[in-house]
Length: 206
Image (tube, rainbow, N blue to C red; front, side):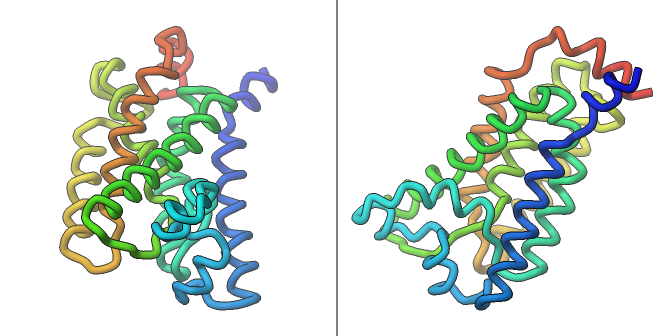
């Protein structure tokens, strides 16, 4: 009984959120996370460094960096709420793979668009990976007849539309990372999620 409960706790999601928060606190202690140059120095995506310098590791490191406390708080709030459901659906290891792959893919798509339009902005944040979680949940919820653990695709869709609207009407938001994460998360959800989890997840809803 205890083992089953522990297995369903979102340890990986908590760990991911903790890494984001701890890294933010460290960076704030040695500089300013709202300084673009400082953020590039510590792993944010900057197209010339990635393409010309071959620093592709930035597609990974950037997903753990945030521009200021509000950026961090908004992302972590959504991650803690939705990531828990996706981790329960996939299991711990698959969720970790899913999250990291979604974040890297989202940053890669954003970078490709920047290169295509000749733009070179500094980008960072967990939102690409978080939108990956949303995309994955859209798939998982769909095959669970539109509802999973109290969450529906209608609620997810409303959240996505609201966030994308805010992004496209605000400055400094990496909308391509959001869209890239949404698409990659949906695809990864198809690849990684298996229906054999259906009974266990449905049981948790009560």
